[in-house]
Image (cartoon, rainbow over the protein chains, first blue to last red):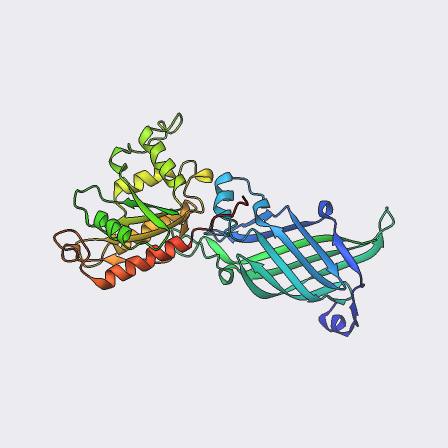
Length: 182
Length: 186
């Protein structure tokens, strides 16, 4: 679809009511380029989220980030990164979800390490469908890219030939399966 | 009571950094106490072979002293633009294993003194970097006391009110980083 066609589509509001995340079939995580080459990514396993009358809000426990090395895990939770002791949760609350066809956009506020900043999340919406248990359900795939230094996460290291090891741009991704509350 | 552990990076008797810690102890905020750790000389050179079994007694004592403290104040000289080897070595021991070391989330502050012009400013910066890598909550402050021979009187007391005020401010900020105790209902 071209951008023009996309713009011509009517904006439609999302269904009203309360839609909660099915945690087993949803995922949250971040990715960031490391050493200027491959992107490092990690899921955050414990989170809850709901869309209430088209507004998404949620919280994730940063201690549930999954990485393959215990020292990296400790470093991510330390004051140099997320400072999980003082700021155990990452939070999001948004304005009303705007739907154009299958595309969605949300303006919201993201809180990381105690710093709240505006973000725009973009992605796609699928459904709603009736799930096998008779509940309406839809899917949201969302992403946004933030500058981590704006949230006070400033760690870096020099590369031998110049430049820094860790990108400031971090992409947050969510794949949410939302079930309408009975 | 907020318990601050003082660690000097110098082993020398009459060290200016030991005097800085003494001056810090005299300007503590209400409700704080400062105890100086004196075990640096006893810490063996870090050796991963020694780190496989029970820790050497001096290392255990350091780890326990840090764990028991609410915050740690370092006063360090500068050797060749960096951290004195003995102090770095002690931190290398204390940081093992990294994921559970007693400096994790521990509020720490770094001050320093040298007989030269710059007051151990590079050593302090490197020490803050090492402590952050260990997972400590590093206070974003420095106090560089240069020309150390001219900064203390014959009794080892700070002569300069500006230095004393800056030191007191750092110690007060350090104590303020300590989380308030959780009240337990009687």
